[in-house]
Structure formats: structure tokens, C-alpha cells
Image (cartoon, rainbow, N blue to C red; front, top):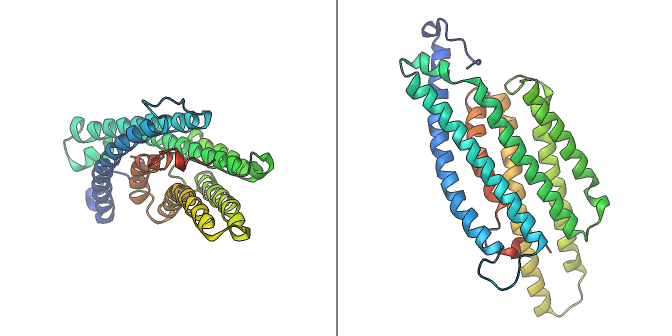
Length: 277
């Protein structure tokens, strides 16, 4: 790793402690990532089966195909991230298992950019899908997605630029702007969706039983959207905080775990009722 200098590290107690914490976090994060990926695989299979109505006479709609395609891409990216994590772990703890210093030195920075690239791509897919939900809920009004689209475009440029210039662990603006724009996109899109869904209910003049059913349906859709946006928002916020507070341990651990965690938000957990109509 380029984060710490292994020369004379045995004489630096702080560096040695940091190195041990990093190695422990790598093992723990890979274990958690494996569990999350296993759970996601089950959820992905069940969600896709329900969404595409396997065995049903009716054909899946275009909207359901889009949701299924996005989920499949997320699954492939999560699998690729897991393979990268496993390769990095095997190279460090098996191939170079001579001493603590040799294991640490073998944690190659070359795996860091591809892992961050996976996370950035997953986050952008989630942001685009959130904009798609916003577009549908607002009856396909293009102007309502202009601001989220601009934020997402800025996030894409700064996110991938941080990979090109190799600034993943460097203190500069690119990774920070990416996280901030992702948070803003999800908060803005969620707020507009919630306002669109709940505002007609407050103005409705229908019988109480019908209003109760409408409110229950709106609450179901709103809960799914808020939960989905919350995962991306919390993930970006956590990366932003650990980038400053613990760049060599907490930040890298979050970067290992989040790709398998956030993919769960791309899966319709029950049925196509979670797809905004």
C-alpha cells in the first residue's frame, strides 16, 4: 500500500498499529461483503422472478424490464467487486504470507481504483434510476429531472476523474464532490417524489375508506423509494466522513462493503408494486 511506509515500521508504534487495524479491517470487510453478496443473490433471484412474472401469462412491461436490467448490471458489478477483493486478499495473505510487513506491502493499490470504479458506477446507476422514478411519478415531465441530471453529470465527471488522476486517497476535490453530488441528487429526487405522491392526498375530497386505501398505497411506494434513496445517501455520507476521519482504515473498509450493500436497494423486494406507476 502507498498509505504507509514499511521502512522502519517496527520502530513506529503508531504506524504498526495502523497497519494492523487495516489488515484486520480488510479481513472483516471481506467477510461482511461475502455475507451481503450471498443475501443479495437470494434477493436478486426472488425479486427478478417476481418482477418479470416468471410463469405468468402476461408479459413483463417495458418498465419492469428496465428495473430487471438495472438490477442485473448491479449484480454483475457486485460480483466483480467481490472477485477483486478475493484476489487482493489471496495475493496478500497467501502469496506474501511471510510477515506482517510483507502482507501489508502486498495489499496492492492497483486493486483500489477498480473497486472505487465499481462503487462509482453502482452509485451512478442508482442515481439515474432514482431520476427515472422521478420522471415517471411526475408524468414524464422532463423539466423536473433537469437539476438531478446536472448533479449526476457532475458526479460522474468528478468520480471517474478521481480514478484517472489517481486521487482516491489524496486530499482534493474530486472524490468529495462526487459524494456530495450523489447525496444532493438522492435528497432532491426523493423530496420531489414524496411531494408529488403526498400532496394530492392532502387535497383529496373522496370518501374516507377510499382515501385510506389511496394513502396506504402511497405509503408503500413512498417507503420503498425512501429506503432505496437512504442506502445511497448514507453510503456516500459515510465515505465522505471516513475520507477525512479514517482514510486508511474506515474509508477502505466502507469501500469494500458498500458495493454489496447498496445493490439491495436496486431490487424490488416484494413485487412490481414497488415500481412507480
